Length: 521
Image (cartoon, helix red, strand yellow):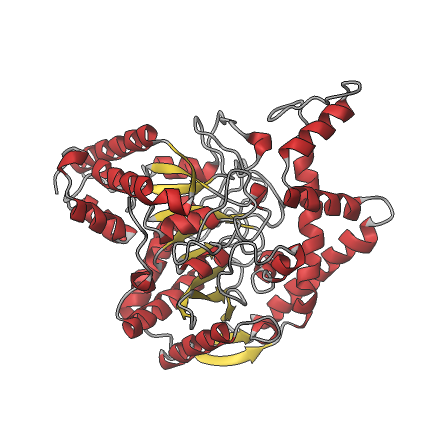
């Protein structure tokens, strides 16, 4: 392919470009078969064609993306002339969840209270993307302030699942998952507070990773629950996810929780695992408390156990491991998370930045302005969690609720510590159900309960991955979750790479090849 204009790019070639994996796109860039401008243009055209139906993006700036692509092409020419290496994904476009600040581009957290806000700085992980010359296609939709599990709670419209436009794409990183699953972006960045990367990946047939807490900087990530929030990579394959992980993971002195020894080289781990394609000696622990039961779809459990059999075929030993305090994890999370969210969202007061609404009647005071602003600027789900969190932190209730929840968190962490003595990785279904229809979980408690499988990793701060394990009887993706000890992110990628290879051999290709075609204008 040449570096010509968009009009000279054949439709078929553009389609094959956007459907290629990020690793394949990177290889084509390195070989000079395609330019970053051409690759970015192809994805922008795909967004223009299908995102009206999908709704993955809140903001797309084609001029900025193409300027980024031109800079990537220039960097590649300069590096070639100097004989210097470049990050493998240089020139491969990406999408960024709109919870992550981007200098000069609108960042809203999908909330009216930040509508139109243009940050004057980049989040550290965005700086890492820019330093590696990954063009940013745009900002993806989410549940407002990441509060939700369906991307139905955005102030600017919902996102649909590319497998079935009448169903949810998961949340809160549903926009990033849908963009990847709809071939609008080869890779994307999300955030995971209680499963917000892994659950959307599971229901869209994509791959998502919550890295070890503290290994990807939170600086510039709009906070919901500071002790739980974890940015991470999303893609269509385990290798692509690893390649993006290697770009965004770094030590950051601007983040007080950043770890100086962030695991790197995940792409190398994946390639080595793919070459060996065996897991001899690996101890896999099936989490007893998450292996089916009330609320789990039979299809999900069947797919999970079929994938376990493949791990055994690859040489792993599989046994059941109990984490007895997980039965309290969901309750603890829904006390800790809203408490921290309430504290973090106190800054949106109508006086310092963001939306300002003055009362229609009565005196204009700090209290009345704050009340009017927050009433107009926050959606119902955000208000619900602020109220709950404020109550949890109030005098007379702090020890009974928030303090007790933190004690349960410690018990969960101890359960994991004991489990690592018996297993190298732990596994479970990523979500107990497949993608449900819009409006089907109007009861907030029903939505909260679907986080039961993903929340434990956030409470413990351990890394976790979701990858597709098959389809349900009604043709919807099912996710398989892998968890590893802190800083052992490489285990996720080793196991995920081998399992993905075995599954794709069984399917005759990637699961997304079985997805229905989106209607293109």
